[in-house]
Length: 289
Image (cartoon, rainbow, N blue to C red; front, side):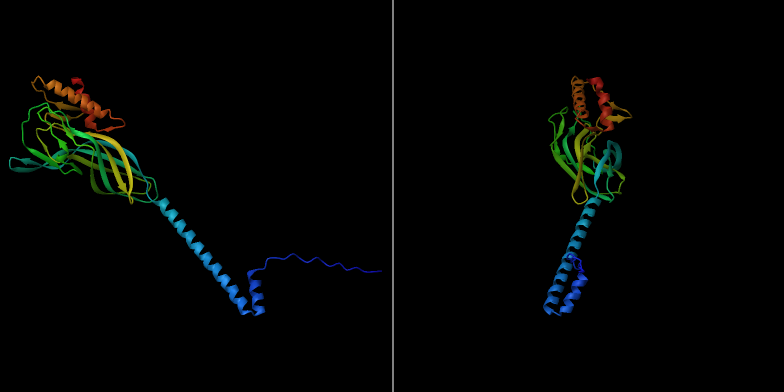
């Protein structure tokens, strides 16, 4: 009777661990093998460290990009408010309060980091003065401490007493500002604008413009158009309407009809935000249409 002995088949090659490989290299006492082996380990380690640093840098850059503030316009309105100014003329100067067009801006910060607004620019597309329907009666000049002063050099002056004064458009006015918008919050601020110089005999001035805010390393937020108007000779806002003086002249009513048409065009500018006073003047001028 023969006895057969069965042998188990050899196990398939298994991946050797790093530690087993280290043991084998040391048992062989091959300095060349040791050098080659450890050089490979060091090379792999350096590569792994480099990859880790690169991943961390990309992650930090991505987080920094995501945390930078992003602004959007929440609300914008416009109306007249008093600001400090001066009267000049006839050899005297006096501190006064003057009416200035104010643009009230509310912005919203959409991100988790604060936003810093550093510059504001007004981009004028239209402007000037209404038709002057009254004879000039004074040389007293005044000005206000506006955020933006419209230079006299931008005005094309009419050739007679009932001609319109027009601004040379387009043109921009910029001012350095400092506004901080907290993360995920709102911030409101005012921008004032008016003529560099006016006289008591001037007709109301008007302007149509966009606003551009520069924030956070060159980002910009632009909105508009916004149409504003200021008071003038024999034409001043009083509550929800305007006081408009009358004048016994055959050309007076025709002159006021031109003003009514001009103001109507301003308030009907597509997508315009018209100031409170411009809207009320448009209603008051209905009787001349």
